[in-house]
Length: 295
Length: 328
Image (cartoon, rainbow over all chains, first blue to last red; front, side):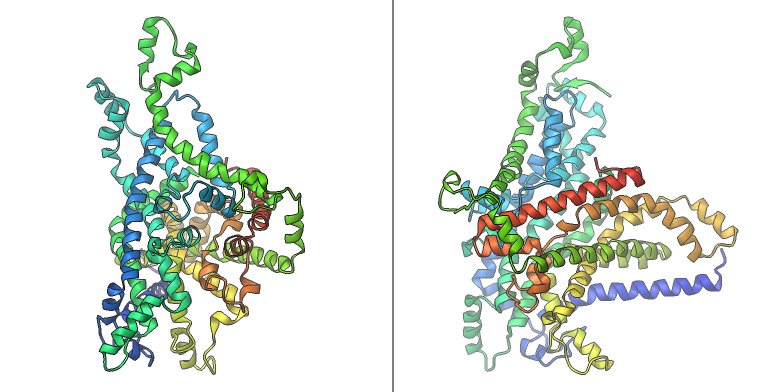
């Protein structure tokens, strides 16, 4: 196919726009990464853009030595793993039963579940319920929040309904109970859909700072993202400043700045997800499509 | 399709006994499929407690509730909380912000991914894949991290944005972007588009891929340029999915999220921009969580829910009439 002059112009313009967009998207992240590896005092002179000028691991050294951050990181990891596991387990089980025919009250369950996708009681009534159930300020609540996502249930259910019947029937003939079929046959062949929904759930739990900010007051239970908000809003935690001071005494001059530490903490909080997601890209693209078709 | 009643008794077995499935009482069927019901009930219980529980909690809006006393002991005050909200000095600011920010997010955030998908469709190979992978990244970042980057980029001393503008002599001195009420909506909406443009384009790209290539071939034989083909083939072909997403977008306008506002105003501590940044959701957070005025905050939340549900019903009504599609 021959390209006309107009087509060539169009193509060039498109390339330029996309290149610019990719740059604007990537630069803030790249620059933050660079700043996290650059000496703080040098950064404050300005002009550090694409490459560290005064390379150092110092910022990360302090971040990982800071017990508060270390602890918050642990909470985030535990919350993400346990929360994702619970959510997947109970949502998939729910969806599996809902994919069967002849379930008593199935329609009622479905209506009750779908209504919650459009209506909710709001933040404060939710807060009061959680408080009265003595879940306020507990790790338990951090992993329970959002455990049953109706949207995910519908995606699971669609997947289960499309599964060939033969698989389950042969297992049943072999004397498997319904729970047995679910655990030994259905879950193992649901890899792709579990991978997609786990990714979304895990990303939510990993990135969520708001729920802990409202429902957790014990600093020992604060996850990393919420701690990061505190650091960004107030400059640094008391612990961090103290740590910096002791660190500074060891140095001839104070080279660490609050900004450098912020950047390092931000990277610590983001990099794990960014390193995992490209490998799951083909799954979540599929997941997004299944979800949108169901609407 | 097979008819497995609870997976326990296939219809053939029931017929052999001479007693059709349907005749069994509800209770007996329920007990017979106890295992499936057991799979459902943990989730249903969760939904009833954490989704339906709070729905009763809206009664707080008509009370003067104190978290340290039982619900039944707090006095009924009728619509007092609502009147206080409507007559509060910040009410009209909040209404303006809620609607303007939501509309801006929709007006710019809705077409942006479509345009990106159209552009991506014009290129191919590794370049397309790289742009896709890069533009998906921000979707996976938390608003906290994004605010940290925004503060760094927009900072007065050595922020990249100010540096670039100074370099091209577009400004004479660095601007403190996040402390200027005039720029707040712009920054907020830009960051939202920046975060979601790539991820939002996935669905449209898939729709574009599904278009029959024969249409493009026919068009180019007829002498239509690529530019014309975009408007005459691609856009009309993805119109149905665009309409569905527009309806969803309108229905959810008021639920567009408020984490972005909270992080950009440093948890509502940036007093200079608060008059343009405070929306109903952040106000509920401010009054309920920060100031512990539970009943008052609930009233504001209930007011928002009423607006939001109305909007959803209107959007769905339009969809039924004009788009021949509906959310339910």
